[in-house]
Every structure is written in C-alpha cells, then in structure tokens.
Image (cartoon, rainbow over all chains, first blue to last red; front, side, top):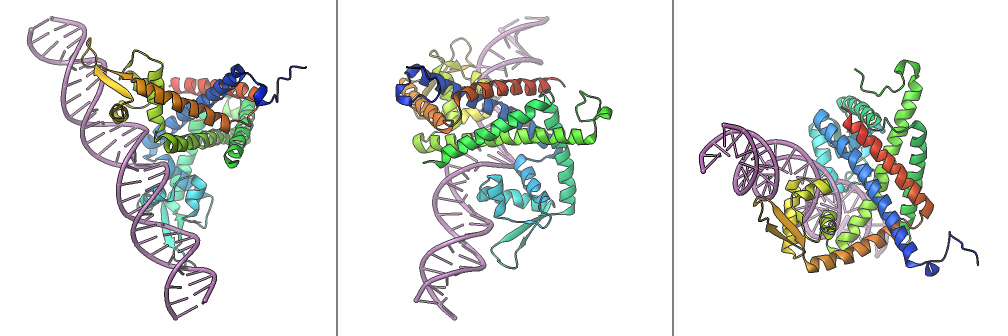
Length: 168
Length: 168
DNA sequence: ATCAATTATTTTAAGTATAAAATAATTCGC
DNA sequence: GCGAATTATTTTATACTTAAAATAATTGAT
C-alpha cells in the first residue's frame, strides 16, 4: 500500500502527525497575531499623536468618504464590524467636532443619515495620506511581488476560516 | 524631507507605480487585519462562553505554565505586550479565583513572584486543549503545506516591519 | 384605525486598553 | 549609613468593546 501523504483519513493518522499539525496551526496563528498587533499598535500610536484620532473614528470617516450623499447610521456597524452601541458615542463626538452631520430621514423617522462635512472631508484626506505613507514606511522592505502573493494567500485564509465558521 | 520611502529615486518612478504600490500595501494590511480579527473574535467568544475567560487571562496562565517555579510579576507585561497597569487587575482576579498565587520575593521585596496553583494548572491544560481544537477547526481547510509557507512569509513580514520601526 | 410585532437606535454595565501620575521599595555613590 | 535616582507596582482617567436592556418609531394584521 502506497504511503499517501495527503488526504489520509484522520482515523489512520498517528497522533504525532496530529500533534504536528496542531503546532503548525498554532504557529501560524501566533505569527498572524504578532504581525497585526505590531502594525496596528504603531498606526494607532501615530494616529493619536499626529491627529488625536483613534482608528474607529478614522474608519467611520473612511466609510463616509465613499458616500457623498451620506449613509444610513445603521449601515455603519455592519460595514465596520463594530457594534451599534459602540458607534453611538463615536458618531456623537465626530458630530461635535464638526467632521460629520447627523440628520433624521424624511422617509423613516427612526433612521438617521450621517454625512461628512466639507471640513471633515478635508481632514480625512489629510489623515488618509499620512496613513498610506506610514504603511508604506512600515512595509518598505517587503518586495512588491511578495505583496500580491501574500495578499492572495491571506484572502484564501480568510475564506477558509469564514467557511469553517459557516458550517455548524 | 519627504514622507515616502525612496529605495528607487522618486523621479524615475511614475506616480502611477507609486500609487499602485500604495494600494497593494493597503490591501495587504486590510487582509491581515481581517484575518486576525475574524479568528480572534471567534476565539475570544468561545473562551468567554465555555470558560468565562478572556484572552489576556489565558495568556497569563500560558506564560506561567512554562515556568514551574513562577515568574517575577514585572516579567509578564514584557512577554505579553500588555502594560503593567493593565496587568494588575487581571492578576488580582486570577489570584482571587485561585488559579495563581502572588508572593513577595525574599531577595527584593519590591518584586512579586506569581506562580500557578495546582488547580490553575489543571484548568489551563483543559482550556489549552480546547484552544488547540478550536484553531484546528477554524484552520481545517488550510492545506498542511500552506501552513508552513504562510507562517514563514509572515515571519519575514514581521522582521521587515520590525526593522522599519527600528530605523528612525 | 389600532395594537402587537418588528426594526432602529440609545443606554447601561462590566471588562479591558492605554498612558500618565502617584506611590513604594531598593540601589548606589558618597 | 544617607538620600537621590532608579525600578516596581498601583492608581487614575479616558476611551473602546460587548452584550443586554430600554426606548422610540414604523409596519402589518385585524
């Protein structure tokens, strides 16, 4: 019988193999986490220092920048993977600071529409430019051809995880 | 001095290339962030549901599990990338719940030594086993040979980012 | 038209993250 | 040994996350 290395049924695999895969999966997860926290921490720090802004605040502006006519408030939590309860004070403060406006819809008075102000748009563009430059600085040593490949692999990883979450 | 990196003189690269690399870098970062938050969110949720435990609490136990004779309290923030101020209540509660002990050192009474209790060790092993199984479930669709390659690439990415942070 | 069910949003509460300031103990030069 | 500097830890303050409960407006069935 041939020693099929791939797709061997789990029942016929010895414990050592199982353990090895466990370790490989854990290593992958730890690397992923390390890379993300490293970059995220630096971006967050710079946002705070340069603009007194947090990432969620920036993310809200980023969404609104793509919607010149504004966005239904309830759409933001869906797009940003942020809970609605958490969004409220963030939007409150963005309104207070003059970056966005919040007005009730005429069609459905439960719904509120948030829209970027002119100054908000200007401020966002400035921050987005810095954001891009910071990322370029942090990723400067990653060869351009590697960027694409890694992005694709992460895309597949995301799909695999999402599928696994769908199953049960 | 310009903000952007200049491994190739800017003058010889056209703006479109520059923009393309910016976009590729941003895409990579967004994928990285998406994968991590997806997995992290699921692990966090299960930890809470199954064990009423948070990731930082688990991480502290994971560190102590490798140190049978205990660990100087001040060592934990360094290893876990968690601030000392934040660690205090976490350790407080682990002590309160009987997972660990905290005793002043004889040699240096400023220093406290934290050590896992027998029950703490047992509880940790149980949780670690679940953690491994959850990860295996989430990463089940990632081919074994891809695991290694991706881990290696992320290692290089981490190194590149770390180098970039060192420079200034 | 009215009332229960649905949907949108806000509030509340407990926990965690981060940074800065405060407190406490120790070490080292003198 | 004494006292300033260092180091360890805690406290404080602000912000964010999450889930659950509360509030408010609208829809749909009768």
